Length: 331
Image (cartoon, rainbow, N blue to C red; front, top):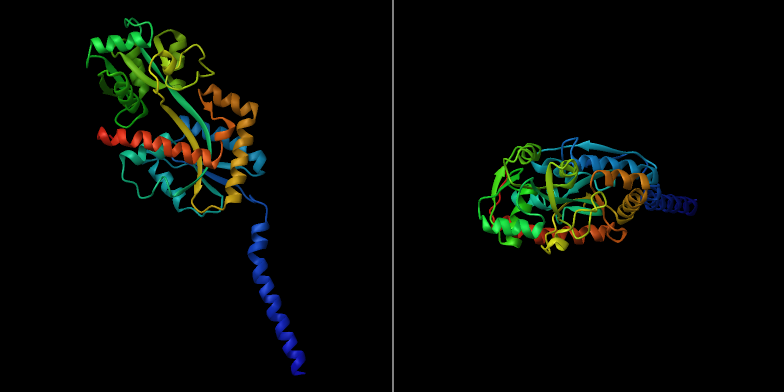
């Protein structure tokens, strides 16, 4: 009798151990994802980053078999939304759609309560929007070399419209000055839309603006375009030369986007998400919609966690020293 009871106890103990052992495995074996995924966009709705995020999220839904829901959580140049993503569970159901502005510049000009390099798990590089150097009509320069020559002949006189300290237009202007040996007077605006109005009216001389914003005026003939700040021509504006080709090698400034998850998100989930991004970016409709926004999709080889990690690190190494040297602080 005692032997039978002992065998029963051993069997119960064995079954309990097996149940405990299989519990996590059973949970892990469930196909991911089993419910909608939240993609935090740390900027207000309606902006460039928001538009790209929505296109990519729509494209990811089919390969994932679940909707990817955008939640805009703006404030402090992305800090609020990014902080929320950092604190989220590392289960693949909360993602952070970040950019050059949020994951490079913001961390260079502010003391953040998290580390942009180590508190996020990179998923994939997505696309970039290079800038274009435009000037008022009537400025005596037919190409970028001529523009630089005119600027050198008139040091600290040309007015460059920007969106304020730490903006892409401001940093691009500083970078342009350093590479060309020119001196510009930066004029901050509440937004580059206002600066573009003054450029068209001839009240300022230059803007280095996102191609998506500037190309309509270029095509309308109200401003002159001199170069794209990228190493390849833009599909939506193939007639505008790159800065490299126009005489300023290395003038590469792009507002790029990537997708991150909270750190410690399991690698199989990261790989599943990356595969969904790759599938989305391969869709002709997605590519067309992004191209229409002036976006240049990164090559397939860079659409990986490793590609995003390396690109992010290189951008930090490029921009943080410049931000520090210029003592740039948010307006």
